[in-house]
Image (cartoon, rainbow, N blue to C red):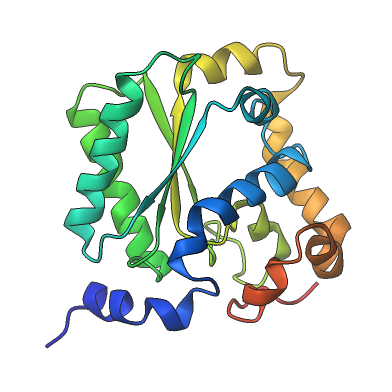
Length: 209
């Protein structure tokens, strides 16, 4: 019997709206247009200008292999100076199309981060085409603050984040501000800003304003 993870890996091409070959380019466009353009993250803009963001792509088809690719990227950023590589987004193009499977991978990567003794040095953020905040209806447009073209784990330098946030007024209000912005823009506004959203909006249940 095919496993749940294997099933979703096999169905990837039918679930993701874009070819795997476009992952790095599309994720970069998404960061520059949505994350920086809408100021969803207060420290992203300088890193885009300095070209210190790595857009990594994993073609792993199994959870274990995806976790190994994550560890490889974690080792890579650990070995680099912040001025050379500030942050890494690891996108998975052949597995975890299912959001619950992605959460399993995220939990596994968090465990690996802690086992490596790097908790407090790096922290993880997550994005997914079908991202859904806990307790928020699946069709709520606020989920689009964390919806990206591909399942992605973001490796962040915690010290860097802390240095930026200390100069940011009311950092605890950032998530609420971003959710309110999604409500203001609505479906049409988001698609106008980033047209590729139209290609996978229908594949999610968040198509309502």
